[in-house]
Image (tube, rainbow, N blue to C red; front, side):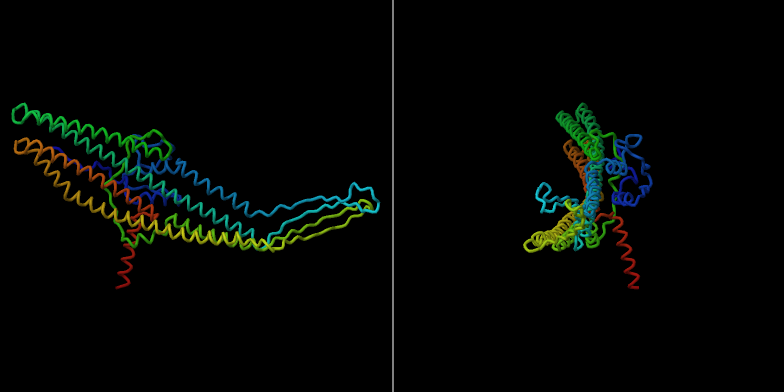
Length: 456
């Protein structure tokens, strides 16, 4: 009796929500274990995988966070703002000047002198603190941009990991298909040799076997490509792992729409847009401060060469804001602020639209998985087994047996694809809300309990 497994699984290695949990642990400096059955955490470097060439999601994420060049570039932008803040807080340098008058004149009635002067520009109106504030908010914007990119890279890695899991499962299903087609062909050949079936059925069975071989070979190529795409995320052109360890058949409770949509405000892209507004407001304040003229104070000594005398000189320079009152830059800053406000509204609308689409797709994927698991696959499997036994007894034709076999394995492939789509949608939603769905479901339970207690 042949056993038909939908998916070969390894318990406890990949579950929805653990991607964001891993991110949270990195941000807090803690790296707790992922659960029973997980491969222990390694001090991984590029190319480091399990001893048997097996790769877990945890190891893949560590490799990506350590070696992804795109993420490294964003981190450099954050550190660059340290220089921006430093420069914004510096005072203007003093200026030293020497002035000599009539030094080459031969007339005795003209007093020759040389002046040594030091000048210092003094900024008024709080310009220097305003510049520092703009630079500080710019660094906070860069921090949020880095957090958004980090979240994107983690979600992209998790989805690439799911792609490999999906292709591994498809190779497994198609390998089973090939074995069953081979067994069916042997049965057909025996019936043809015994004169119980026409020779045409043997030809058809060979065609079915060739088709199964082609599909399996294509699935292996797809698996190889998926492994390469995953390895490229941490900069390896050739993957050094043979397989990934994970479980497609793992599910999470999906919270209510309104509860999740409110968490979109925690997305780093939204926080970055808020920092952008704050920085634009700081720029408006800076441009307003520039309307107040700066003064230049100078002091020095004047040496009279003819009488051998020295005297002190002082001076103050104050610009008169008659024509240029910085009105153009201030107007520009106000418009940039309005633009930032509109961009924030646009970001929220885009995130809400994307979340709504993915949330509905996630519900549809869950229903599809339930239908395939509870009704379609058991029915297709039963039909195939009955038809297969009936063909051996001469009750069904070869085409009927072949159709039942094809329907069963096509539905197994559909089930694998539905599971992979579900996991990718979970990753996408967790990226949008910047938190695991499991945590959101737990929050919902706590809220419901608190509501019941208040009612009581």
